Image (cartoon, rainbow, N blue to C red; front, side, top):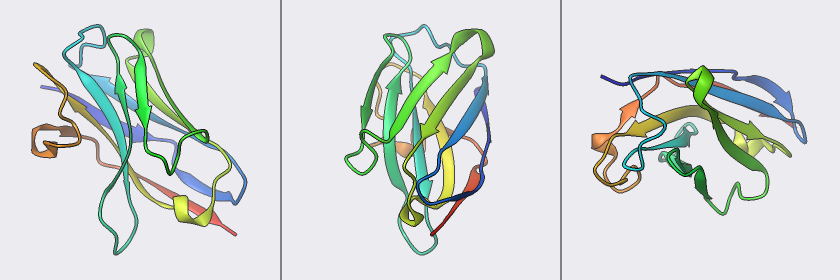
Length: 127
């Protein structure tokens, strides 16, 4: 059973930076069949995918809305994935969730019902 816990949310001014963490248990970072992702959801809006991180080969793809501003990484030794956010705008506010999917192929965006989810952490960006 994979468990995920997000931390690091808070309030920040526009233009600022914030780093979110997603601590995991039961997830194998070395497997090429597994992947993780970050999503966010603002009030009244659908859940938005931000990026998928293929932890086995450390490749990441990003949504256009965050490309160049957000960076996803992980630390095997700490069993943690990170979301480094910079140049934040009020539109980046919302509840941020990490997700994980375990093999055989990564369909973390197209088949979210197969994901393990964290409880979320709130990010507020003030103008």
